[in-house]
Image 1: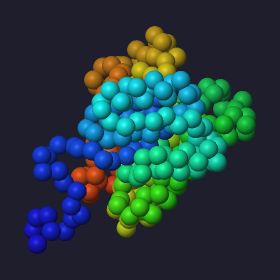
Image 2: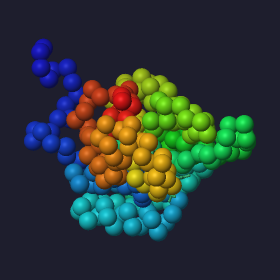
Image 3: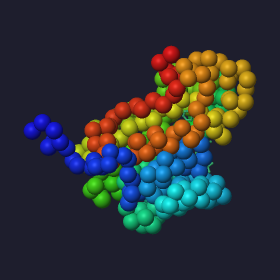
Length: 267
Ligand SMILES: NC(=O)c1ccc[n+]([C@@H]2O[C@H](COP(=O)([O-])OP(=O)(O)OC[C@H]3O[C@@H](n4cnc5c(N)ncnc54)[C@H](OP(=O)(O)O)[C@@H]3O)[C@@H](O)[C@H]2O)c1
């Protein structure tokens, strides 16, 4: 037994990612990094359920995804509300007939206030979306994947804030650090079901959420100088990352923090 006998076979003979017939949830898939990853999945044949609170933005994203010739649907869902997550996951599986993975990407920034002024309510607001929301989302996805019995891919979107400390970023940084702990525990627990669990650590990326930071000349210059590729990422650069992490052919890839940051965290 030397080559290929010890694995679950999902490999694609053409050697290229092919997600035809597969279905993925992307929370926060109507914007930025989430939309980038959703497009990458759609471009190689995967169907996408776009979750977000804004129905109009969901509809715009669905139109973009459908241009790739795949099925796509929007679901108005606030991931900080457990009941909405449960209902959206049930509706997604009912509408598409199956589930092959979930990108828990929806997130919010912190309040940017000094730590000494940070209130418990503000702390909890950040955790409600970035940590509780991801927990409930991946739990519901995992329940469906385990029941379905054909494996799958769960991706928790973390941040370089899980690696670098920054004053005024305590709640956000804590939420994103916690996701990596959750990812590791799930990778161990769900491996027996052929469910791979990884986290994504994006670097500075030009999106709605990071817009104010990008517009700040001084901050942008400092971060660009600290990034080996000498620029912020475009959200479209996460297309291939989405397709890669969704790919069922990556049968041995689990429990990892996948960093896509232009070299920021190693510099
Ligand atoms: N941009 C960066 O530099 C950077 C770096 C590291 C990590 N990240 C992480 O990457 C992820 C995506 O952020 P982005 O930069 O692409 O920002 P973005 O373009 O502003 O997208 C954020 C997405 O999250 C959704 N969202 C926010 N709160 C939600 C909630 N409670 N329920 C459901 N959906 C919600 C938004 O849709 P609705 O408003 O319609 O709900 C939107 O689709 C976040 O987790 C962020 O922390 C970003």
